[in-house]
Image (tube, rainbow, N blue to C red; front, side):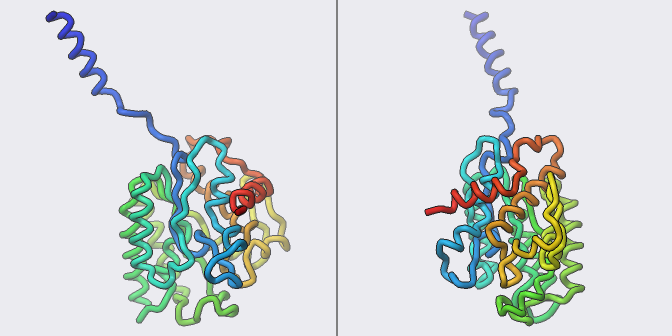
Length: 272
């Protein structure tokens, strides 16, 4: 009996010394949080509709993932701008409740730099608050930097008083780099450069090819701010490209890099 008892406890201690489970794939439970670029927005459908659904980012992020995974969840909303602080808290809570293995927050910080503020100093403080909220997310996190959306005032989609100064916007992006350097689980997507290239109708380089100059302005809607379905598909591949560059041990074969296929599959997922 003593031998059996000793063997039992030896096996028990050995089992306790092992990890409870193998590290999960980052693709297992992907969650999206953010504003209208994530949640989808079309000016002719301010309260949502078929075309809006086709612009929701998660459809294309999901379509690009080859590895087995749960359907990508999207807590992003076009209503984010109405109350960024309250909406952000709700989205971060919803995301953490979903026990994500990866969170995509490509436009989460946009309204922590843009929006109605009393001063540029207030924008800086608000941006810090947005970063603080994101610190509650413990898993790998993908965040977009702040683009120049000043041209969107021409379409009336945002007011000129909501646009930060160029100096404030650049300072926010420098602060984001510093913050990400202190949080190794964070990957920055160069959303600002993507927006600049697309608005200028310049060539956009993808992981496996290049969209030629003169063909990329169609990735943005006429409002100059929100992606079209094809734009959402291309942006999704840009997001995954940035993530894999930051995590080279993850195989690039776990993503479908064909933008046309991702667009087609994403549209299928968006279908009623």
